[in-house]
Image (tube, rainbow, N blue to C red; front, side, top):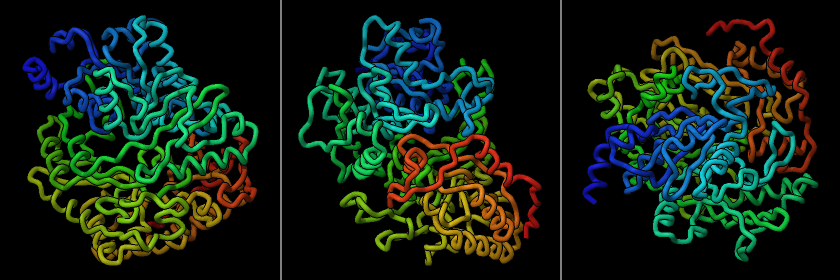
Length: 581
């Protein structure tokens, strides 16, 4: 016990080990758990393996990391030996196919999570490749647990854009033993404790595994054979899947693959405020591991360095977004004292210059409030929180967020606090008590010349398929934003994110979009993206089936790559400069 305590004190102020030399300094002959990741190891709470690793160490386990291993030999994968309990495998912070390819399926040249920035270290379908690598060289045959966003979004049968087909659960294709889905702190810690005691793990929430024995109380999904041969069965599968994603009211799921079954346990219980605080109060270096830093700059560090997560989850449920599937549709927020503690720790880092780059989360202005009914009974099965309108049971309030913003910017040594995470302008308008004050605080103190928002489109038919509010709400917000700037004597601007070629968006829709952009916001945005169908999102269902899954009506889907590019190019053609009001 004393030995562990000393080791933890040493590790608390340093990186998790990635080399044998570090193991020797810690006096660790072997590790309990080894994480393998497709990213460079950045010791930050934004990085899954860093957070999970530090949490496991705090609870008495010895953890190391193998970052972007070479697939051609055993040198990297066995650098730290083999684990006593299990391997943990993740593709990294991004699905590897999204990281490696553009929406037009062209190979990306750069990777912000790779030293030097060149996209040459993360393999396609990285989770599968890393599991195969371990199985090739680990003669001890230790269990393999996969997780992270790639595994989470591919945990049941899913449409894969890059293959243009329905793929099996990644558990079958990787041949791993366990899949951890969602934000995995509680799950991975419980698994580690079960493995350490040699106890059965099959009732742990938040995991999937393969079995030949059914669980009679679980809900059956249409089988893999059914969803690959009938698009209506695929839609049915997705509806059952989405109805069982809130830990309060979800049932376990089963999906048949020939003679074997995918067992999908109910979701893990969400952390409460105290638990969430404890995760982010672990000691982090907020930097790239020195061993990897020597290999070249890791650009992602500039985005996450000096940024602070204040909440998790998103009840927006945009149809094209993966957050609802991975983090969940319930928002959990950190306490103000915990966030202030993290600012104080950042102040002690050598590169802190008084600027907090971002105070946010998946959606910055969902901090500090949730639906009381949803907290008690779980997410409504057939209703969304803020689409097509904000539910009257959802009390929208920016009061606590305003308090947080004020307290953080008043900390001695903090010069500026920026908010660069996405925000929902419809929630600002809906908050009649504190919405205007929140907007005033943003404009006065928390933006530097421009505020980023994501209307995604301006054609209401397309917006409805995206699960986004109508363009009327955008128009109201634009007027309010510029009026508030004039009132405060500021000259700041809005920048916009737009998606083209989403299901329901034809070239004719894009023409109308351009006209509305010029009339509503008087500019063509720089940030225009071509839609990418992400696994297990409703928009990917629309793309594959060419149907609105909620009405059954046929919809237009652009699948020709050249025509997708034409939509984007048309918007950018003869781009007019905004008069910036």
